[in-house]
Image 1: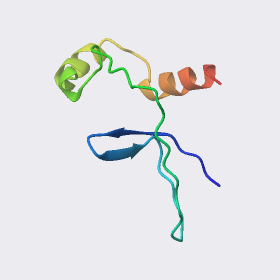
Image 2: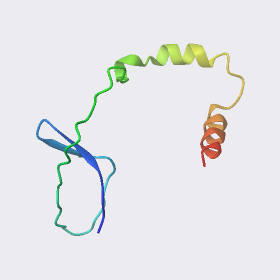
Image 3: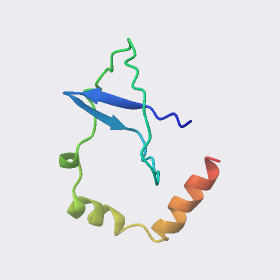
Image 4: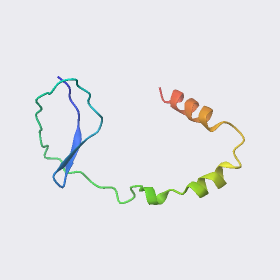
Length: 76
């Protein structure tokens, strides 16, 4: 048995992660009484600018990839 949580909104169920199976499987969908609180400060793609990111990263002298790897290792 596999358990995956997700969100039901406007007639669509969106799973929080992909489930891969080589065969068809039966599923049970349980609707919880909890209501999802939408954060008004939620980021959208409109909040990001490639141009601003490039400008800010010009002053960074290290390897961004190494910095991301180090950051993720510190969270383990």
